[in-house]
Length: 140
Image 1: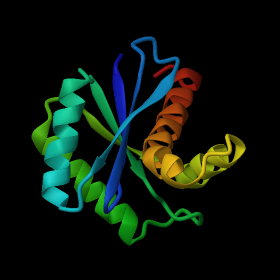
Image 2: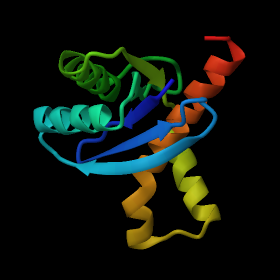
Image 3: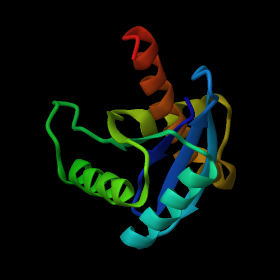
């Protein structure tokens, strides 16, 4: 199944996709948009363009398991995507995905503009990798 993940941000929203065998998550792009509704439009359009059958939106749950303001905003964003798409949109716990993406960039010695250009789509790929691992381990 073709799955696309979204790492929603106030200014930059990362997009990643997997192959139809659900083996590899690959960063696709970053959508630079600060306007909430316009961002949802652009993300929905990209998801359609990629031919996704399922969209996964990262949910930044707090480390103690509670949902804060950021999580609520991401849930609202996912709801906007549901209104714009004819495919399921699921939320996925993304705790530490951006931190992991920064660690990967450190290991690759990516700094400055190169890092900024890919960090959000890398975080989206990490979210998708986690989701795909769950699906494999739970026969979903």
